[in-house]
Image (cartoon, rainbow, N blue to C red):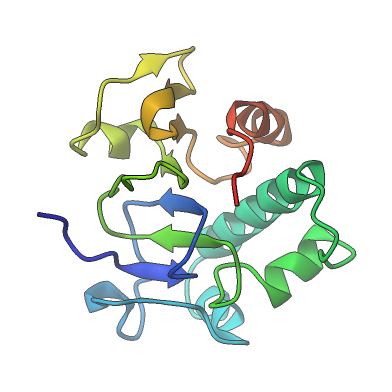
Length: 171
């Protein structure tokens, strides 16, 4: 039996990011639903928590903006910063940031990206092939274990590598 997805973003997400921690404010530590961020909510989280959440949102916005450009999306804002502010993990977006364990869909259309090998080790994942000390994959489930979304761990160079590992989006 599948557990309920918990986190931010589109309920029809085509890219699910899984992260071990939650913003330590408001109701986020006990949140039990999956919903899109509202306008200004990301800014609220960053303002009332450590610099950590600013980095998480920035790294994922850079990654997604670059990947969507390569996929040929024509409806993107002008920059990754605008993407972060207008679309990232919102109801209308194509991605989700989840605090719950991965659920693999039967039709295998969702890309699953786990934030960090330490978190991945605590999850019940299908067999992984480690490509190096940073990345592991399971192609059957469209699953990637990647470095944690921090500038040092998931640097621009590693973002580019992760983009190359991500399967082509199927609509």
